[in-house]
Amino acid sequence: MNLTISGHHLDVTPALREYVLTKLDRVTRHFDQVVDVNVLLTVEKLKEKERRHKAEVTLHVKGRDIYVEQAHEDMYAAIDQLMDKLDRQVMRHKDRVQDHHHASGKRSLGAESP
Image (cartoon, rainbow, N blue to C red; front, side):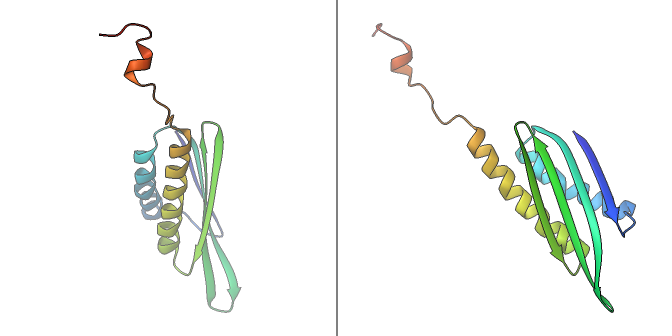
């Protein structure tokens, strides 16, 4: 799994990087077929003394890209909410990918019967 964490108008500190890795671990625990992850952390200055922290993630899995973004006044809260959204998206994707059609044992035996 390739992981890229970058910041826009923000220095990605080791503590922030570790926090993202810890939260991302929960998502990869549910679905291990993740190919590539890009995380972008942004600070937008709206008005004087007012800032909006935005976290975005693009998760590339086999056959699909999952994109989620979340904004909040606090960066850690934005990351928390982002990972919650991402987890729901990944679980929904996993449910769609899984084969729910199982052949019954009797039909797979063919003409033989005990």
